[in-house]
Length: 171
Image (cartoon, rainbow, N blue to C red; front, side, top):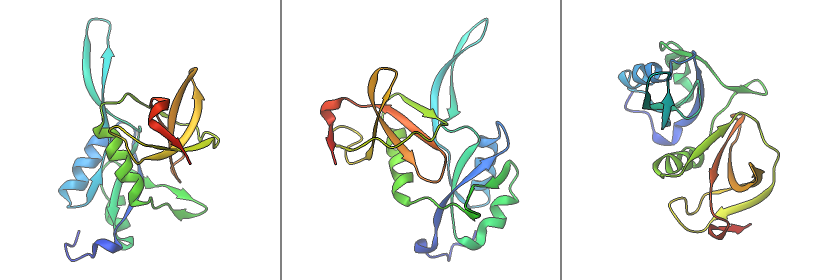
């Protein structure tokens, strides 16, 4: 990717990868000089004979690329990349703010869960303290606990994180 590209022309796009090819696709993109983000979380997996901590993609078969509009072909020609995500016939770009919030969530030590459902809107809130201070989201009832739902617009999934009720303000 050309280094002369103006940063204001760059947008984040979610891309769909081939199954279980997220890490390989991420490596191939970074080798090409494409800015990419693959949120990984550690999880304890159990087999019949052992347990092991593994790093898995937070959102299966997705990663994010920051490119100019004219660099989409370069991304599609990368091994492991299946397609861009479309809504209403257009490739979906994500606001920088959402990627920044996702990075902040990943940097926290909070337990995260991704749901593939596009959950219905609830009460809008903003976190007022703690490592996620400033992140806005929606409240949902889930597993009999109050949890914050961070909706990733135009992606078709949401991230659920446990946040104490004392740490949120209603908007």
